[in-house]
Structures are given as structure tokens and as C-alpha cells.
Length: 353
Image 1 (cartoon, rainbow, N blue to C red):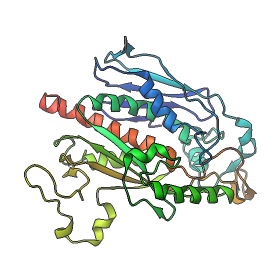
Image 2 (spheres, helix red, strand yellow):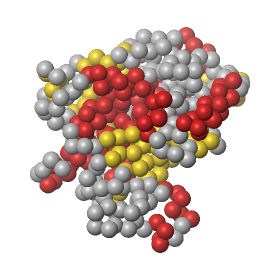
Image 3 (spheres, rainbow, N blue to C red):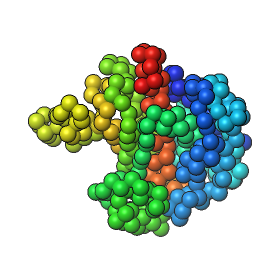
Image 4 (cartoon, helix red, strand yellow):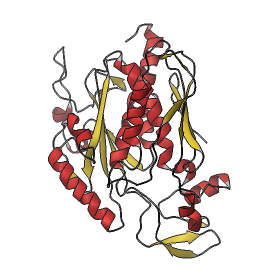
């Protein structure tokens, strides 16, 4: 199974949803960078379950244990291993699903691939795996901040409710993590309606990076666009990615979407901060389509392992909308991609930026 992402900044996650723990090993963190564990914990707290009535009520503290790679508050340049223990799994909730392939889940394809699967919460296909990504992303953010790169993100659509403003300072002030306070209220109502109907709703998460200098990325196979696409689509429940103007550009003319450069800055940002696979110095903007959560309480038809079908209603604690918790994961994957691109540029040009 591929659990590794990145080349020079290599991130390998491990663990299952209902196993003893989940975690990550990060190889390639430059030495001598001051790392405050509280910053890593802050990002994990943003991802953890049970934050509000709009998310799953699984009560995990997601307390990070840093096992290696730091000494006296600084990175050693050696692998950094981080562990998050599972303490509130309630595996009994999944006993009835041992021999059932849940609709929308990866149960059937996992069994076809490996011949065996962990039916408890989806095993590796569970969103619980993303705790390791967020811990690794926190390291990347700490390193990127030393050269002035800052990352933000938020939920910009839930169902048919769309944000029209991007006030990034507002995202942690509402449970939807929306940068538009007025839209956030309507999004919360939409999520609550789905929850009360024992259903779920999808949406769109937007992430952006400021302060990325021009020149990161590659012009052909390893375009930064391609790396971001792979990173975002590796997040559970994501089904689409667009950069900058994205799909809206398909209905416009080149005269509308060509970003004019005046010698100092770009006057528009349809390219989303990337031209020819390489950063151009403008803000990097990425949007991710997040499907409705597949675990819902409404009765559904499900295939049985022995053949035939049955009707199930999935019990347990699940998110009626995944978007609020995808936000820190998508931010982390953006940070991981940029960190790897930065190290590749340093190796190519022999300078910090």
C-alpha cells in the first residue's frame, strides 16, 4: 500500500481507524528549525473529532507524542516520528458490518485488492489516517514560516450554499470554518438539516498560500499543479481539484483569463499562482470538491459478502459534512507539497529561496 508522499520532504503515515494508534514519520525536515510541539497540537486539535454538533462525536483528544527527531526544541535533520493514540474507537459499532459491503465505502475494493480488510471504521481508508498528515503538515508550516510563507483555508461551499467573501481570519470563529460569516450560518443550517435527516452533504474547501516566491515547481511531469492535484485527491472523500480560475475558465476567453504582469505583480490571478507548473509569486489558490460522507443513518441497500443484498442503516458517530475537518487536512497537504518544492529548489539553485 502506498502510504508515502513527497521526495525530499517525505511523509509516511501509518495506523488504522480502530487500531492502537495512527501516526506519521517525516523524513527531510531541515536541521536546526525551532519546533514548538504546541503548534503541532494546535493543528491536530483543528482536525480532531467532537469539535461541535456539526462533526462526529467520537471523543478523541488526538494528543501528539513526538518520538524522535527533536532535541532541545530543534529539528535534528533526522526522521521525526509522531504518534496519536486511539482511545475512543467503539469497534462494537461495526460488528454488524463485518460481512457487509457498505455503499459508497471502499469495503469491496479493499477486499478485492488485499483479500482481507479491517471492517472497523474502514481501517486505512478512514479519515482517521489524516491525523498523521496534519502532524506532518504542521512541521512543514513551521519550516515554511521561516521564509514568510503562510497558509490559510476554509469551507467555501456546503451543498448549494456558497461563500462570497474571503475573510480568512473568520474561519476559526464558526464551526463550519467558513471565511464568510453570513454564509457560515446558512451552511450550518444546511448541515444540521442533513444530520437531522440522518443524511450527509458535500461541499468545497479552498486553501491558499501567500508569500511563495516565483520559481518553485517543475515544467513537465512534476508540475506543481500536478503535485497539488495528487496531494488533494489523496485526501479521503475528495473527488475534484481546481487551481485558480479552474473550471470557470473553460467558459471564458483568453483575453479574460490571461494574468497581466506589470513587472512587479500580477493584476489578476486566474492561474492560481502557478504558470507552466512553476510558482509565479502570486497567491496559490486551490479548491477541493468534498463528497457527502458515506456513513449515514438512513436505510440503504448493501451487498453481502456471501452474496445478495441487505438493508442497513449505519450506526455510530459520523460527520454529516466532512468539510470543516477537511480544511486543516487540505492546508497540511498544501504545506507538504510546498515544503517538498522548496527543498527541491534549494537543491537545484543552492540557495534558501
